[in-house]
Length: 344
Ligand SMILES: Nc1nc2c(ncn2[C@@H]2O[C@H](COP(=O)(O)OP(=O)(O)OP(=O)(O)O)[C@@H](O)[C@H]2O)c(=O)[nH]1
Ligand SMILES: [Mg+2]
Image 1 (tube, helix red, strand yellow):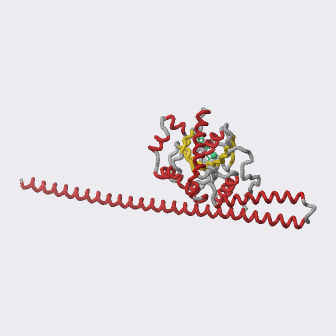
Image 2: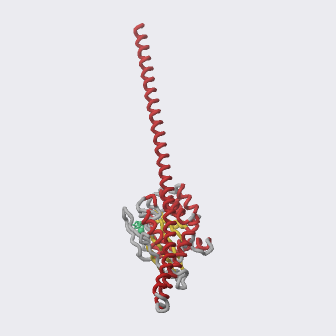
C-alpha cells in the first residue's frame, strides 16, 4: 500500500461549536505558500525561507482561533500540483495528495493558489490549475482564490495590485483570474504591522465566505473526496468494533473475533486500494496529458525554429544574389566608362 495510513480520529462535524474554515495552499515552490500560511495563522507554524529547492516536503496542518472565534485550518503543501517541475515522483505525489485529503477533516472550504509579484508568471503555472482540475474536477475553480505574495515589493514602487496586473497580466493568468471571478488578494508576508497583517487575512476570509455562500455553504467535494469520506467512516467503524470486541472477549470465541476483524480489515483495505488506484490513474492521466502538451509545444517550437532558419537561409541567398548583381552592374559600368574614355 506504499505505507499510506489514514487517521481514524476524524469527526464529520467540528467537535467544538466554533465555525471552521479549512483552506489549502497550492502553488509553485518558493512562491510563499508557507509564509502565507503563517500570515493567516498569525504565527510561525510552517517553515518558510529562500531556497533553490523545495522547503516544505510534506503536507502540514496548522490551526488558529481568530478573535471572533472562527477556527482556521490551513493546509500547507509542497509544490505538489506542479507536475511540470518533475521535482516529485508519482508515488510521493500520490501519498501527499491522500495525506492532504486526510488533513482536511471538515472538507475544503477554499483552495488558495499562491502566486508572486516577485516572479514573472510562467506558462507552467497553468499546469498547476490543470493538474488540480484533473484530480479534483473542474469545479475546484469555484473554490479558488488567488493570493499574490510580495506586497512589500509593490509598495516600494508605489504600485497597487491593479497597476501590477494592468502591466503584467499574460493571457493565461487573465484566464485563471477570470475562472475564479477575480477573487485575488495581495499579501505582504514580511509586514510587522499587525493591523496590516490582519487586514489582509480578513480580506482573504471574506473571499472564503463568498466562495462558501456561492457554493451553498458546502465544502468542496467530488467522487474522490466522497470515496475518502466513506473510507474515513470505515476506519472509525473498524476502530469502534475492535474496542467493542476487546470488552466482549469472553462472549465470543477467539476465532469468531479474528474472523470478523479480518473481514472488517479486508473491506477497509479494499477501499483504500480503490482510492489509491483512483488517485494513481488520475495522476498518470494528467502526467501523460502534460507530457503530450510539452511534446507538442516542443515540436511546434522546433518547427518554428526550422522555418526561421529556412527564411534566414533564403534571405542570405537573396542578399548574396543581389550583391553579385550589384557587383556585375558595377563591373559593367566600369567597362563602359573605360570604353568611352578610350574613344575620347
Ligand atoms: N519580500 C517578500 N518575500 C516573501 C513574501 N512571501 C514569501 N516571501 C519569501 O519567499 C521565500 C519563499 O517562501 P516560502 O514560504 O518558503 O515558499 P513556499 O511556497 O512555501 O516554498 P516551498 O515550501 O519550497 O514550496 C522566503 O524567503 C520568504 O521569506 C512576501 O510577501 N514578501
Ligand atoms: Mg513551503
